[in-house]
Image (cartoon, each protein chain N blue to C red):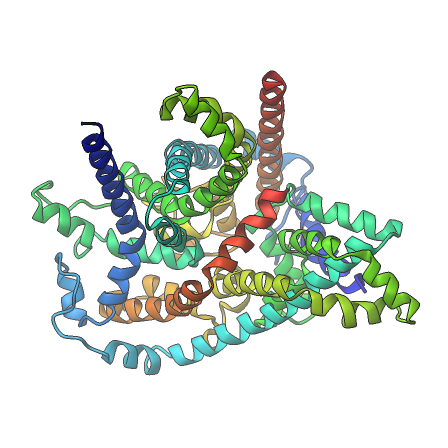
Length: 282
Length: 289
């Protein structure tokens, strides 16, 4: 009897787990499959998941007519710059905060940590835009890139500081005896030791940049040739020809989520580590 | 070496706060000459702008309801997946998946799923005879709120589950072994061992969840854009639209001075919520000890 009970319990648990898994996966699967449907089929709706005929024309149209090629290029450019910049910036910051002993670094470190709690989120976008205008950065993706890289992402800095602290200071001392300065120790010793950190920071930065919506939106709204993918895809919803462009919208969404999906499938370990580390250790 | 980033930080994180505080005292729309108003903008927030308070109310409502569903769900899933269950690693990866996508794109995806005429949700409900006519999910406040909470649940339950899993993995297995030798049922073990020991993580998750929901912007802008008739506006989107002309509501005038004043009020309210929360959780901790 007891055995029967535990089998029934296990089955029930599995059924619930699978239902939640469907809840998690369904929207993504539906969009990916839907992107191969004809516009007519999408507009009629219905419960069929699979397209009646597999059409690749949606992607062709999105790529050529709706200029998704351009948008994808912009997104790749933006993401690449933010990833490279964030890696260098956050590891540098981590190194300085972990090893620097001057009053100045301590004050800055405290301020960055405070910014975790005192922040006005989206509401600082407008002042940032005004500021960017002063430097002539308000009409391209360089504004968002600079904000993302130099704005000190508190979480990333925090993870990096923790990581550098774990590297034994004896390494620094040994290098110092051999005649290395502060900078040389950083480039020759610390940076190469930070490989796992580079992976998580890079991934987090990639996710942020690839998903960014409002920040690039307010900077590039006037010039659609500079839009990244997310801005372009969302704009299809509110544009006048919305009804005729459902298929483009589905194809566009797919183009924007597929890279993320692939990266996640291969590197989910780093993703989970990166997203949780920063907050839990706090 | 840290200098460029310090400058960046001061410019992009500190300066906006100062900017907002400064302009909150002016009537300013970017073109006309700014007029000094003193505290007039603040008086307007507190006495003459019910829309702001209803947006704030919506924010708390969404945060509260979402928390009630999400936290137990994430915790139970974490407990189940922490056991020796076949395939639990796979479930973890699947549940976490929604957290990696762009919130704006997620909003778009769900607005397609819940579309009134050709959305699959209505189609499924129709086929299973649960509804007689298509539900207009974004046509009234109740339905729209339901979708908003569902979507924000979708995006973060996996992340919160992972937080709990990390907490659970720090609990020594020996405690459970002792408990089962003493004859404690699994349920008893959950309440007497698991819950008290994940309490610190629980506090953290609660705070992150509430603060995250309070700052929600992209999702609302894309999913409902505050509609219908501004009834699902949350505090961030409401203020955002005084800074920028956005979407269908583009006709509204931008008012930087007033928007700044609302930002200051909101930042203070968020700060107070955080403080109260920290106070309460500290008191809870001291009772435990």
